Length: 266
Ligand SMILES: [Mn+2]
Image 1 (cartoon, rainbow, N blue to C red):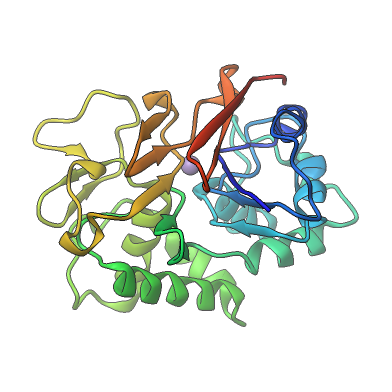
Image 2 (image 1 turned 30 degrees about the vertical axis):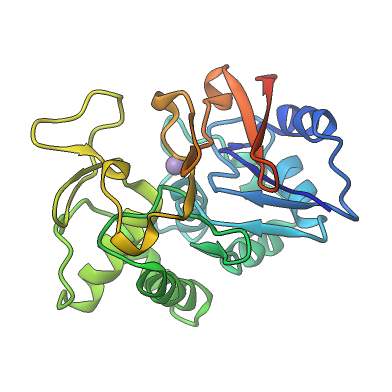
């Protein structure tokens, strides 16, 4: 009865299977958490989703690539040079894949374990109640009748400063960018969505250098930032260790904070 949180899979099905075997993961007893970017960039997106969809105990927080796939599948965005999702787009189960992804979350909270997970992280501007409210708002749009409108309005890096009185479209775009694309941050509410490396742009710091005062005792799990090469702190776990870039796939067992890792097999 263990819970394992796995980093960005990006369609690396062979590595995922190897990691589950390494952890002796038992689908009937154990629970898998995925911090998002389940698909795209990697080779086996169909197999990855089919494996995850069959798990009885699974919690997912969606990543930017998962949302991008949904947008492409609706003709809202176009396939770019680094997108590898044609296996999903050409598959007879495409409608099922889309509906399943649309039903997933943006934020997972386990109060008993004192752990929270999102794809990109949790900035100091929100406590758990506020973050939950915002994630639920995005989830409602994604599951609602006008979900394509939400995805159409999602693209773009502006606005960059969070205010409680942003107009709805801008509020949703920034909230989605924060939960799925955030890396660099300037206190007290400004985000930078261009830089991907481990060197901060002038005036900015990694988002996790700041934390909401109510969240000091909580462990935050996140993915998205492969350039960090993984973060292993008692209060912070960066789970993206660049599997799709040929490095490794990593998971954390939440009960005893043990890490598992397998080399990338593409
Ligand atoms: Mn990502």
